[in-house]
Image (tube, rainbow, N blue to C red; front, side, top):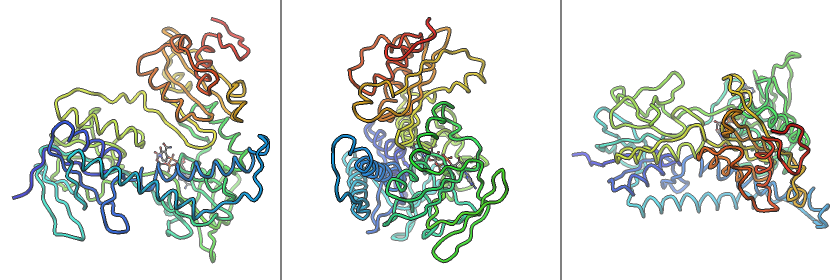
Length: 478
Ligand code: NAD
């Protein structure tokens, strides 16, 4: 007889563990299965985000940013830093301790909420039977009333430059360097390429990013992307657009990469290469042929707007389903599904998913871009506030960037907010809340912001929509 659970969650990454905890909070007998093991062979929850993604990258981004500030920002503030040096091993130790605390924290949360945790690879069959296999024990078959699939994603490997986990690595390997590579090549100038490129460039690597597309950060607002490119060039990140990597060859301890650009075939030699060309859903060997769940041509699990798959009682959330591959999007989907199983009716508002790139300055946005609105024929007004005019920005050496508010020209409702600047990852939450509550630019303009703060940039940008910003020259008035 197989064991029975009300809810079986496959995957203990952000989407899965949120789903499991909420399901248990709602009174369901819940099992969460994951195959991620630590070096002791124990299950380590948290998925990519906690183990080899968001969290460890932020530990290295913060440490390297502090080092770079100490090196180039402190002297102007009258702070002397004689003998400043980096200790990469210590930086990595700090990163590992953060990962260990957080993953243990998730284990504790699952346990304290009464979620049963099982390690192994789960495969869904017909009738919501889940088979869990592992090297340690014989397969276990579990009968689920409801299944929530949250298998996550993994880095895409390209034939032109195969990862060897030595010289050529993926994003996971790029978080593990124990020394600073002299010359670091990064394939792909997307989110991961820019974040990891920033880390190693700040620590002293000569970083070249080879990006196949001619445009830079095509999903971002054009003005923000242009400002970002300017700032990154100033930081000596060598970003080459329209550069498609076609081949690579090992040469001793280095790799020679060939890429094609508008002028023909070029080659560059690097000490290390990071392949950051996107991620793919981790859905191989997840579904038996009779599971009733379908995958699309790219391997994503097909779901509706409520994350329901084609099989009754089976849901899928996170990176393995349509939409942005973002931890917070998966978390909200996980919570929504658990509550819908309970009979509640929450929705995920996919129009207000915030996007953040943790470079310096940070880049963040929510909602629509000017280009997107033009394509839809929607008329809008725009307010922009340059951070160079921020008093707090000046006091704290954070004058790079801008905040842009886009509002519907008829209703003044905020349709999009785009930021590049210090703390944009935190500030964007204000914009998400405003949009979630259907705020107009005037509503934000009528809201009191503490002075002096970086967040005043959002206030001023909202005021600028009607030409009423105080700290910039307004040309248009409405
Ligand atoms: P991405 O899609 O953001 O960028 C990959 C880039 O690689 C693209 O611009 C693409 O044109 C380029 N590319 C592809 N093949 C190439 C080739 N042969 N030569 C040169 N360039 C090539 O993907 P990513 O940066 O790997 O990130 C993966 C996913 O993880 C994304 O969905 C991202 O949103 C998510 N993620 C988010 C965060 C965050 O929210 N801060 C951080 C890390 C990852």
